[in-house]
Length: 200
Image (cartoon, rainbow, N blue to C red; front, side, top):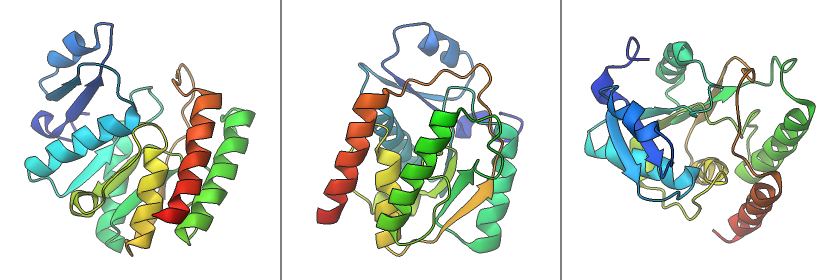
């Protein structure tokens, strides 16, 4: 990824890992941040967003650490933002779903429908963590979630703030990927977040 983005602009958040993640990441020369204990994906994103703003970075690109995102696609996000002026560009895997597990495909379609309804605009792949986001927009957006539901919260709040949200096609990569999503707990958090969004 350093061939696309300079190492001093790559931010890695170690969210309380108990393996060798921190040691391995330390050797990469990137900006490394660490949570003393696991706080959740949303909390890790918030930590990275804050650091990016401190560094004067106008846009961030988020990638999950499970191998599902191909860093070589980052220029497509940048090009889409420059062409459209959007505040957020979300990766879209839904044009090629042949390699997506059936249960994941079904839940992605359902959650994307709910988020699109709450946002008042179509977002074809709302659960995709591969995104480009304006740090100026994020600075004006207080987040109340700390887990996987944070990414949905961002889209709903961004839409209500009048932000422009676009998308760009990305690969569907699942081979060898291991998700840390808890289907029961994270589905409950998602539905709770959707209900809470009526009162934001």
